[in-house]
Length: 194
Image 1 (cartoon, rainbow, N blue to C red):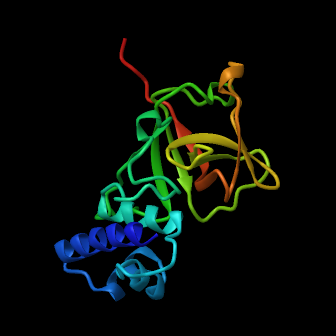
Image 2 (cartoon, rainbow, N blue to C red):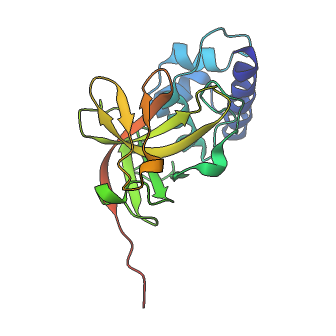
């Protein structure tokens, strides 16, 4: 965990200095507690960063976090992402650090109506309920790689794929081999000119 916290602290320091932000100001802007911001700025912190808070910071900074947010090494496994974070513009009045937009890149959730090229919006403050579609990080069993994807939440704490291709069927447990970024509450499909 110390390596993760050092990377996170350096990332925080860079973006805060770039924007001339104090920890108090960053906490107020993002809605993340001051104590949490203070811990994230401490390279010697022993606490594991919470994914939804780091995602809020990433959206505000307009930059991907320097850490994987999972048990693997930072950046590993991202070549297989099924969705890609679309950076929001924190200068716009409708910006919310709790909301994130994602571009669907694969057809693994086609059965649920999500196609490559669709844009989905997730809310980090919503608690997943049985049947909700969520944006999540999925970790390999050995914890060395992670990928970001859409999955269906099944109570009490499982994420499942619903692909018609049986080789893509998998089950992950939240807190063990998966972590949720947010619950999808909106999607849109861009029309393509013919």
